[in-house]
Image 1 (cartoon, rainbow, N blue to C red):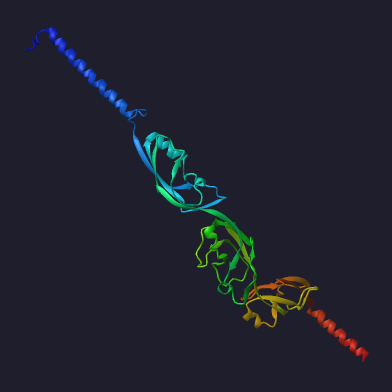
Image 2 (cartoon, rainbow, N blue to C red; image 1 turned 90 degrees about the vertical axis):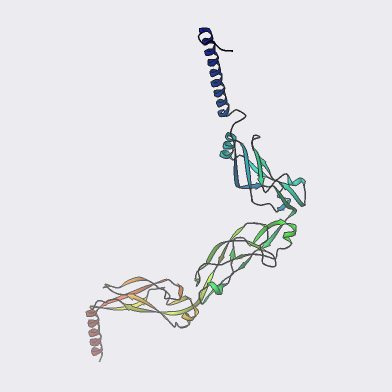
Length: 342
């Protein structure tokens, strides 16, 4: 059939058909684009995310049971609508937990971890997918704490360690019954970084619970740390003090040194035994530079190498100052008195 395009009605009909076809195509294209971009449409974008190092909540009465075999953290893979996933990642308002272990009782069990608090629009998988754990009755005991310290390796020569002082002499230990039976030693180890120590040692130390082979046991301790103080004492020796004049004295004066009233004339030195054995006395230097009248001075006592402490740490010294001319006059008067007597 041949169309007569010269007929105006036929031309108008063909144009109308083309217009209707073009309009339908554009409308369908726009509708398809709207469906692909609408976030509420069932065909919205799906995404996934992996979160690591999430703590595991253990659902059990910790006063009655002790659980072993559960790792500290787990990994979860989330999948679902992008908007829901983004909000979940921002809030992290969900937990990874075990089922209720109280209903299982003591023994070995295989359980699957669960995610609590996730949106129902998200799918998830947890790694590890399942765990084999051991539930045992919990035992609580008190144990004394022993201190291990090698004074020969850390103290200076001539110094000894007194009995250690602990903030807690005993600790409360809790754990599985089978593990508690293996406890052989409860201790703290004092290992200062420095050597040649001459002063008291103060350290905050972890409490170690060991079996007979020296391996750490999986138990809980309260407190977990205790403070340990080890008094350090050096060898003591008491010797007399000698006052020694130093400095630049004034030529117009003579000086005499003596201990002030009530001051000790002996000193107790604390230090290395080899150095103390060589000491028969102790010199205290008194500087008389610039002194022109009698006065009392407090003289600090410097400690030589190998001496860590002394008693006293300073001493009051009376410095008697006498003019040289007055001394000559006193000598002449004494001679005259002797002549008159004769």
